[in-house]
Image (cartoon, rainbow, N blue to C red; front, side, top):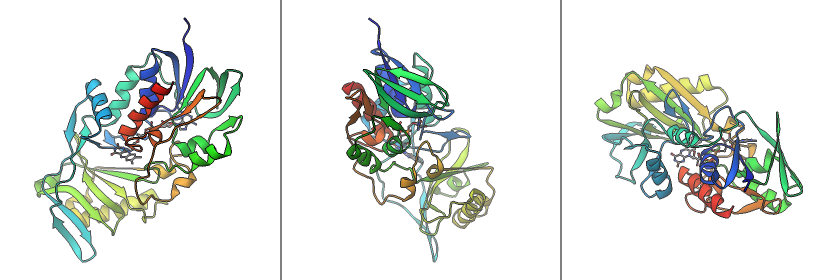
Length: 335
Ligand SMILES: Cc1cc2nc3c(=O)[nH]c(=O)nc-3n(C[C@H](O)[C@H](O)[C@H](O)COP(=O)(O)OP(=O)(O)OC[C@H]3O[C@@H](n4cnc5c(N)ncnc54)[C@H](O)[C@@H]3O)c2cc1C
Protein backbone atom coordinates (compact mmCIF):
# COMPACT_ATOMS: atom_id res chain seq x y z
CA UNK A 1 0.00 0.00 0.00
CA UNK A 2 1.21 3.49 -0.82
CA UNK A 3 2.38 5.39 2.23
CA UNK A 4 0.65 8.64 3.21
CA UNK A 5 2.68 11.79 2.74
CA UNK A 6 3.95 13.57 5.84
CA UNK A 7 5.59 16.99 5.73
CA UNK A 8 7.69 17.98 8.72
CA UNK A 9 8.36 21.70 8.94
CA UNK A 10 11.66 22.49 10.66
CA UNK A 11 14.80 20.36 10.89
CA UNK A 12 15.72 21.08 14.50
CA UNK A 13 16.14 18.14 16.87
CA UNK A 14 12.39 17.66 17.13
CA UNK A 15 11.79 17.66 13.36
CA UNK A 16 14.74 15.38 12.61
CA UNK A 17 13.85 12.85 15.29
CA UNK A 18 10.16 12.92 14.29
CA UNK A 19 11.25 12.13 10.72
CA UNK A 20 13.39 9.20 11.86
CA UNK A 21 10.55 7.83 14.01
CA UNK A 22 7.89 8.20 11.33
CA UNK A 23 9.66 7.42 8.05
CA UNK A 24 8.71 3.72 8.10
CA UNK A 25 5.00 4.59 8.35
CA UNK A 26 4.90 7.70 6.16
CA UNK A 27 6.64 9.09 3.12
CA UNK A 28 8.39 11.88 4.97
CA UNK A 29 9.69 15.17 3.58
CA UNK A 30 11.42 17.64 5.91
CA UNK A 31 11.42 21.33 4.96
CA UNK A 32 13.96 23.60 6.63
CA UNK A 33 14.18 27.38 6.22
CA UNK A 34 17.86 27.70 7.07
CA UNK A 35 20.72 26.44 4.94
CA UNK A 36 21.59 23.97 7.71
CA UNK A 37 19.83 21.50 9.98
CA UNK A 38 19.80 21.63 13.81
CA UNK A 39 17.79 24.80 14.48
CA UNK A 40 18.79 25.98 17.95
CA UNK A 41 21.48 23.26 17.87
CA UNK A 42 24.34 25.03 16.15
CA UNK A 43 28.13 25.03 16.06
CA UNK A 44 30.78 27.53 14.98
CA UNK A 45 34.44 26.55 14.81
CA UNK A 46 33.56 23.25 16.50
CA UNK A 47 31.93 25.02 19.49
CA UNK A 48 28.33 24.66 20.66
CA UNK A 49 26.66 28.03 20.02
CA UNK A 50 23.23 26.80 21.14
CA UNK A 51 22.82 24.07 23.74
CA UNK A 52 25.85 22.59 25.51
CA UNK A 53 24.47 20.28 28.15
CA UNK A 54 22.33 17.30 28.92
CA UNK A 55 21.64 16.05 32.42
CA UNK A 56 21.54 12.57 33.98
CA UNK A 57 17.76 12.47 34.56
CA UNK A 58 16.98 13.16 30.87
CA UNK A 59 16.46 9.56 29.84
CA UNK A 60 15.15 10.11 26.30
CA UNK A 61 17.99 12.28 25.01
CA UNK A 62 20.56 10.11 26.80
CA UNK A 63 19.15 6.98 25.17
CA UNK A 64 19.10 8.70 21.79
CA UNK A 65 22.73 9.83 22.18
CA UNK A 66 23.74 6.29 23.08
CA UNK A 67 21.77 4.72 20.23
CA UNK A 68 23.48 7.09 17.78
CA UNK A 69 26.88 5.86 19.01
CA UNK A 70 27.85 9.26 20.46
CA UNK A 71 29.85 9.74 23.64
CA UNK A 72 29.40 12.11 26.58
CA UNK A 73 31.93 13.77 28.84
CA UNK A 74 31.29 15.73 32.04
CA UNK A 75 31.31 19.54 32.09
CA UNK A 76 34.70 20.62 33.47
CA UNK A 77 34.16 21.90 37.03
CA UNK A 78 37.46 21.23 38.81
CA UNK A 79 38.88 24.12 40.78
CA UNK A 80 37.61 27.44 42.06
CA UNK A 81 34.86 29.58 40.55
CA UNK A 82 34.92 33.37 40.34
CA UNK A 83 32.45 36.03 41.43
CA UNK A 84 32.79 39.29 39.54
CA UNK A 85 31.93 41.52 42.51
CA UNK A 86 31.89 45.36 42.37
CA UNK A 87 34.51 45.42 45.13
CA UNK A 88 36.80 43.01 43.25
CA UNK A 89 36.92 39.47 41.87
CA UNK A 90 36.34 36.80 44.52
CA UNK A 91 37.14 33.07 44.36
CA UNK A 92 34.58 30.60 45.71
CA UNK A 93 33.83 26.88 45.61
CA UNK A 94 30.22 26.30 44.50
CA UNK A 95 28.37 23.46 46.20
CA UNK A 96 28.39 20.47 43.86
CA UNK A 97 25.14 20.74 41.90
CA UNK A 98 23.57 18.35 39.42
CA UNK A 99 26.36 17.34 37.00
CA UNK A 100 25.92 18.26 33.37
CA UNK A 101 27.36 16.44 30.38
CA UNK A 102 28.52 17.50 26.94
CA UNK A 103 28.59 15.53 23.71
CA UNK A 104 32.00 14.66 22.25
CA UNK A 105 32.32 16.56 19.00
CA UNK A 106 29.49 18.90 20.04
CA UNK A 107 25.70 18.67 20.26
CA UNK A 108 25.54 19.10 16.46
CA UNK A 109 26.69 15.47 16.26
CA UNK A 110 23.16 14.46 17.34
CA UNK A 111 21.57 16.35 14.45
CA UNK A 112 24.19 15.08 12.00
CA UNK A 113 23.70 11.46 13.08
CA UNK A 114 19.90 11.73 12.83
CA UNK A 115 20.21 13.29 9.38
CA UNK A 116 22.30 10.32 8.24
CA UNK A 117 19.45 7.99 9.24
CA UNK A 118 16.89 9.73 7.05
CA UNK A 119 15.73 7.94 3.90
CA UNK A 120 15.36 11.31 2.15
CA UNK A 121 17.64 14.35 2.51
CA UNK A 122 16.24 17.42 4.27
CA UNK A 123 15.12 20.16 1.87
CA UNK A 124 17.23 23.12 3.01
CA UNK A 125 16.55 26.81 2.27
CA UNK A 126 12.83 26.01 2.04
CA UNK A 127 11.15 28.60 4.25
CA UNK A 128 7.51 27.68 4.63
CA UNK A 129 5.20 30.64 4.14
CA UNK A 130 1.68 29.22 4.10
CA UNK A 131 -0.41 26.14 4.74
CA UNK A 132 -3.80 25.65 3.10
CA UNK A 133 -6.34 22.91 3.71
CA UNK A 134 -7.51 21.49 0.39
CA UNK A 135 -10.01 18.66 0.77
CA UNK A 136 -8.19 15.93 2.68
CA UNK A 137 -4.78 17.34 1.75
CA UNK A 138 -2.65 20.20 3.02
CA UNK A 139 -0.88 22.42 0.50
CA UNK A 140 2.33 23.95 1.82
CA UNK A 141 3.98 26.86 0.02
CA UNK A 142 7.59 27.88 0.46
CA UNK A 143 9.39 30.81 -1.12
CA UNK A 144 10.28 28.60 -4.09
CA UNK A 145 7.91 25.64 -4.24
CA UNK A 146 4.62 23.95 -3.40
CA UNK A 147 4.22 20.65 -1.54
CA UNK A 148 1.14 18.56 -0.85
CA UNK A 149 0.74 16.18 2.08
CA UNK A 150 -1.79 14.14 4.03
CA UNK A 151 -0.33 15.18 7.38
CA UNK A 152 1.91 18.03 8.55
CA UNK A 153 3.96 18.44 11.72
CA UNK A 154 5.03 22.02 12.48
CA UNK A 155 8.08 21.97 14.78
CA UNK A 156 8.73 25.73 14.85
CA UNK A 157 8.77 27.44 18.24
CA UNK A 158 5.04 28.09 18.87
CA UNK A 159 5.29 31.88 18.64
CA UNK A 160 6.99 31.59 15.27
CA UNK A 161 4.40 29.04 14.12
CA UNK A 162 1.66 31.54 15.00
CA UNK A 163 3.33 34.66 13.64
CA UNK A 164 5.35 33.66 10.60
CA UNK A 165 3.07 31.12 8.88
CA UNK A 166 -0.24 31.89 7.14
CA UNK A 167 -3.02 29.33 7.57
CA UNK A 168 -6.14 28.92 5.42
CA UNK A 169 -8.54 28.48 7.07
CA UNK A 170 -6.92 30.69 9.71
CA UNK A 171 -6.04 29.38 13.16
CA UNK A 172 -8.95 29.83 15.57
CA UNK A 173 -8.18 33.01 17.52
CA UNK A 174 -7.91 31.10 20.84
CA UNK A 175 -5.24 28.81 19.36
CA UNK A 176 -3.43 31.76 17.75
CA UNK A 177 -3.31 33.48 21.16
CA UNK A 178 -2.30 30.27 22.95
CA UNK A 179 0.69 29.74 20.63
CA UNK A 180 1.72 33.41 20.79
CA UNK A 181 1.78 33.28 24.57
CA UNK A 182 4.34 30.45 24.69
CA UNK A 183 7.83 31.97 25.04
CA UNK A 184 10.60 30.55 22.87
CA UNK A 185 13.09 28.91 25.22
CA UNK A 186 16.42 30.77 24.98
CA UNK A 187 14.91 32.96 22.25
CA UNK A 188 16.34 35.95 24.11
CA UNK A 189 19.80 34.46 24.70
CA UNK A 190 23.11 35.50 23.22
CA UNK A 191 26.05 33.15 23.60
CA UNK A 192 29.70 33.99 23.17
CA UNK A 193 32.56 31.47 22.85
CA UNK A 194 36.05 32.81 23.42
CA UNK A 195 38.77 30.53 22.08
CA UNK A 196 42.33 30.62 23.51
CA UNK A 197 45.62 28.96 22.55
CA UNK A 198 45.51 27.11 25.91
CA UNK A 199 43.21 26.59 28.90
CA UNK A 200 45.33 28.81 31.19
CA UNK A 201 42.55 29.07 33.80
CA UNK A 202 42.73 25.32 34.43
CA UNK A 203 46.47 25.62 35.14
CA UNK A 204 45.67 28.35 37.67
CA UNK A 205 43.26 26.11 39.59
CA UNK A 206 40.12 27.68 38.11
CA UNK A 207 37.17 25.76 36.73
CA UNK A 208 36.33 28.52 34.28
CA UNK A 209 32.94 29.03 35.95
CA UNK A 210 32.19 32.64 36.86
CA UNK A 211 29.12 34.62 37.84
CA UNK A 212 28.75 38.33 37.20
CA UNK A 213 26.24 41.09 37.74
CA UNK A 214 28.63 43.59 36.19
CA UNK A 215 28.57 42.03 32.73
CA UNK A 216 28.45 41.89 29.83
CA UNK A 217 28.62 38.09 30.47
CA UNK A 218 26.42 37.00 33.36
CA UNK A 219 27.57 33.39 33.53
CA UNK A 220 30.81 31.90 32.18
CA UNK A 221 31.83 28.24 31.82
CA UNK A 222 34.70 26.17 30.53
CA UNK A 223 33.94 25.22 26.92
CA UNK A 224 37.07 23.28 25.95
CA UNK A 225 36.63 20.70 23.21
CA UNK A 226 38.97 17.81 22.44
CA UNK A 227 41.31 20.05 20.48
CA UNK A 228 40.42 23.63 21.40
CA UNK A 229 40.62 25.64 24.62
CA UNK A 230 37.65 27.92 25.19
CA UNK A 231 35.36 29.66 27.63
CA UNK A 232 31.74 30.45 26.88
CA UNK A 233 29.37 32.94 28.41
CA UNK A 234 25.76 34.01 28.23
CA UNK A 235 25.41 37.71 27.56
CA UNK A 236 23.72 39.56 30.43
CA UNK A 237 20.13 40.62 29.82
CA UNK A 238 21.12 44.25 30.49
CA UNK A 239 24.03 44.26 28.02
CA UNK A 240 23.80 46.45 24.93
CA UNK A 241 23.68 44.05 21.97
CA UNK A 242 23.32 46.62 19.20
CA UNK A 243 26.94 46.33 18.06
CA UNK A 244 28.75 42.96 18.15
CA UNK A 245 32.24 44.47 17.89
CA UNK A 246 31.68 46.79 20.85
CA UNK A 247 30.14 43.93 22.83
CA UNK A 248 33.09 41.62 22.11
CA UNK A 249 35.53 44.31 23.27
CA UNK A 250 33.59 44.65 26.55
CA UNK A 251 33.59 40.87 26.96
CA UNK A 252 37.39 40.75 26.67
CA UNK A 253 37.72 43.56 29.23
CA UNK A 254 35.53 41.56 31.60
CA UNK A 255 37.47 38.34 31.02
CA UNK A 256 40.78 40.15 31.71
CA UNK A 257 39.33 41.46 34.97
CA UNK A 258 38.30 37.93 35.93
CA UNK A 259 41.03 35.67 34.57
CA UNK A 260 43.99 38.00 34.14
CA UNK A 261 46.13 39.21 31.27
CA UNK A 262 46.09 35.97 29.23
CA UNK A 263 42.34 36.35 28.81
CA UNK A 264 43.05 39.47 26.78
CA UNK A 265 44.56 37.42 23.96
CA UNK A 266 41.87 35.18 22.51
CA UNK A 267 42.54 33.38 19.25
CA UNK A 268 38.88 33.65 18.09
CA UNK A 269 35.56 34.97 19.35
CA UNK A 270 32.21 33.58 18.23
CA UNK A 271 28.97 35.31 19.09
CA UNK A 272 25.40 34.28 18.29
CA UNK A 273 22.57 36.57 19.25
CA UNK A 274 19.52 34.28 19.15
CA UNK A 275 17.16 37.24 19.56
CA UNK A 276 18.21 38.32 16.06
CA UNK A 277 17.64 34.86 14.52
CA UNK A 278 14.28 35.17 12.76
CA UNK A 279 13.98 31.38 12.31
CA UNK A 280 14.03 31.06 16.12
CA UNK A 281 12.75 34.21 17.82
CA UNK A 282 9.96 36.66 17.26
CA UNK A 283 9.76 40.27 18.53
CA UNK A 284 7.67 38.86 21.42
CA UNK A 285 10.82 37.03 22.61
CA UNK A 286 12.69 40.33 23.04
CA UNK A 287 11.91 40.33 26.79
CA UNK A 288 14.10 38.06 28.94
CA UNK A 289 12.30 35.35 30.93
CA UNK A 290 12.51 35.41 34.70
CA UNK A 291 12.04 31.64 35.05
CA UNK A 292 11.67 28.46 33.03
CA UNK A 293 8.06 28.50 31.73
CA UNK A 294 5.69 25.57 32.36
CA UNK A 295 5.77 24.12 28.85
CA UNK A 296 3.63 21.38 27.30
CA UNK A 297 0.60 21.61 25.04
CA UNK A 298 -1.35 19.59 22.48
CA UNK A 299 -2.61 21.57 19.50
CA UNK A 300 -3.83 20.63 16.04
CA UNK A 301 -5.49 22.36 13.08
CA UNK A 302 -7.10 21.32 9.76
CA UNK A 303 -9.20 18.55 11.39
CA UNK A 304 -6.18 17.14 13.24
CA UNK A 305 -4.20 16.73 10.03
CA UNK A 306 -1.74 19.41 11.18
CA UNK A 307 0.05 18.93 14.49
CA UNK A 308 2.07 21.53 16.39
CA UNK A 309 5.18 20.03 17.99
CA UNK A 310 8.73 21.07 19.04
CA UNK A 311 10.37 21.25 22.46
CA UNK A 312 7.91 23.81 23.86
CA UNK A 313 5.08 21.30 23.30
CA UNK A 314 6.72 18.62 25.46
CA UNK A 315 4.95 17.81 28.70
CA UNK A 316 8.26 16.93 30.32
CA UNK A 317 11.51 18.90 30.05
CA UNK A 318 9.92 21.32 27.57
CA UNK A 319 12.44 23.88 26.32
CA UNK A 320 15.36 21.49 26.58
CA UNK A 321 16.89 19.02 24.11
CA UNK A 322 15.15 16.32 26.14
CA UNK A 323 11.87 18.15 25.47
CA UNK A 324 12.58 18.18 21.72
CA UNK A 325 13.03 14.38 21.82
CA UNK A 326 9.92 13.96 23.98
CA UNK A 327 7.93 16.14 21.55
CA UNK A 328 8.96 13.90 18.65
CA UNK A 329 7.83 10.82 20.57
CA UNK A 330 4.54 12.60 21.44
CA UNK A 331 4.05 13.51 17.74
CA UNK A 332 4.84 10.00 16.52
CA UNK A 333 2.32 8.58 19.02
CA UNK A 334 -0.46 10.96 18.09
CA UNK A 335 -0.06 10.40 14.35
C1 LIG B 1 21.86 29.61 23.48
C2 LIG B 1 21.05 28.37 23.80
C3 LIG B 1 21.47 27.52 24.82
C4 LIG B 1 20.74 26.37 25.10
N1 LIG B 1 21.21 25.50 26.07
C5 LIG B 1 20.60 24.31 26.25
C6 LIG B 1 21.23 23.30 27.03
O1 LIG B 1 22.35 23.46 27.52
N2 LIG B 1 20.55 22.11 27.19
C7 LIG B 1 19.33 21.89 26.63
O2 LIG B 1 18.77 20.79 26.82
N3 LIG B 1 18.72 22.82 25.83
C8 LIG B 1 19.34 24.01 25.62
N4 LIG B 1 18.80 24.93 24.74
C9 LIG B 1 17.49 24.62 24.13
C10 LIG B 1 17.60 23.65 22.95
O3 LIG B 1 18.46 24.20 21.99
C11 LIG B 1 16.21 23.43 22.35
O4 LIG B 1 15.38 22.80 23.30
C12 LIG B 1 16.15 22.53 21.11
O5 LIG B 1 17.25 22.70 20.27
C13 LIG B 1 14.83 22.81 20.38
O6 LIG B 1 14.67 21.95 19.27
P1 LIG B 1 13.35 22.07 18.36
O7 LIG B 1 13.56 21.17 17.21
O8 LIG B 1 12.15 21.90 19.20
O9 LIG B 1 13.31 23.59 17.87
P2 LIG B 1 14.31 24.37 16.88
O10 LIG B 1 15.70 23.89 17.09
O11 LIG B 1 14.04 25.81 17.10
O12 LIG B 1 13.83 23.91 15.44
C14 LIG B 1 12.88 24.57 14.67
C15 LIG B 1 13.34 24.53 13.22
O13 LIG B 1 12.37 25.16 12.39
C16 LIG B 1 13.05 25.92 11.39
N5 LIG B 1 12.16 26.92 10.84
C17 LIG B 1 11.79 28.11 11.38
N6 LIG B 1 10.92 28.74 10.58
C18 LIG B 1 10.72 27.94 9.50
C19 LIG B 1 9.92 28.03 8.33
N7 LIG B 1 9.11 29.08 8.11
N8 LIG B 1 9.98 27.02 7.42
C20 LIG B 1 10.79 25.93 7.62
N9 LIG B 1 11.56 25.80 8.73
C21 LIG B 1 11.51 26.78 9.66
C22 LIG B 1 14.24 26.48 12.15
O14 LIG B 1 15.24 26.95 11.27
C23 LIG B 1 14.65 25.29 12.98
O15 LIG B 1 15.57 24.47 12.30
C24 LIG B 1 19.53 26.08 24.40
C25 LIG B 1 19.12 26.94 23.36
C26 LIG B 1 19.88 28.05 23.06
C27 LIG B 1 19.44 28.96 21.91
